[in-house]
Image (cartoon, rainbow, N blue to C red):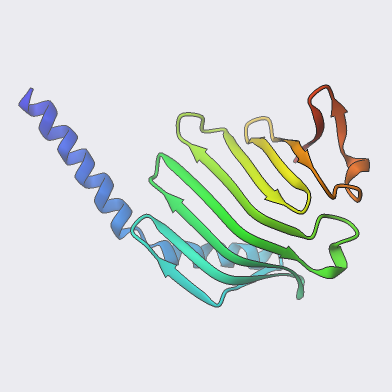
Length: 171
């Protein structure tokens, strides 16, 4: 029994040390380089690294040199077996407001190792409230609009069932 206890303590210490010493900013900069290949650029005002998280403040997103969005706060939180990405106050450029809802107050994407091919999505904004999932194995996105507000511009892309409006696509 002592041997099992020592193994669990060693695993816990290894896991904790890995999280503490993980080069979070370097991983973020590597992601920026990969996005640059797709002509996507993120300019942030500040980066704050926590024990389990990395937070970007006032990030502007540019695609092919054109500013398309501003994110007030972007937080990446991981425990390795559970990961959460949280966006606070996402504002799209005025030029896009005829195509998609302009403001998202909060968006949360979460992933757990217990279901490695599924990511859950929750967002609240000018469009209402959405809950959905991304199936990475089947490469499908399914989003349910649980509360709808300003969805007139995206309504032609939505489908309706007995539960309400939903969006489904594959990638």
